[in-house]
Length: 287
Image: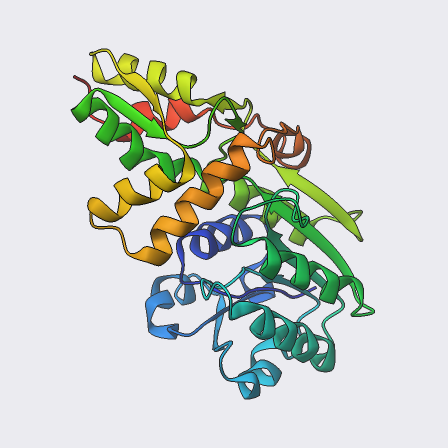
């Protein structure tokens, strides 16, 4: 059985590829990317490397030829990627792919204000309508994205958020990769939706306490409304689109769309999910 990953030169793709090369024979692994040269080290381990570009549908046939199971890692073209994903699903079906795994987000429903929801909801629907078997991995917010937030909080003594009293079950990218690799190499995951989360949901107060513990100084949580949060991000130099995205995830947190904690990581990989605190202690210097 041949398994493939799109976006294989990105952080999640490379981590998933590393897991796959340990779980499956290298000749059964295909890594598809816009930048094949970036995967020379994995090609040297025996993986097949093929060029694919989601803006060039003509690349799908060659990239997906002979593939049985395909992981589509969502592209970063927010607002434009739905058409890209639909084309990739159609290209995969035409190439003979039998099963598609897709990286989505928690609760991609109309009430969820996160700006990425429409793209993911549309892609999930395209999968359901494709006639292929599928698995949807609804990855919670990446824990590594909180590293600069915690660093800033330690420096300023303030953890600023528009998430209110809501909580988020931050998950490490490594855990998401391990789950994806398990689904690609195991049977029994057909037509299943998995919430992929960390082991606990953390509020702003929890994050502030964690920042204080790691940083060795008190950190105060500061609650802002959406407009004030956006203004602060813009004042700090964030581009408008980035500010809107961050604020939308804060609103999703406040409304409870990121708080669900699942046992998916442990169930599929055999090891517990990594707490955010463990990641922070690994990457942030002791103070």
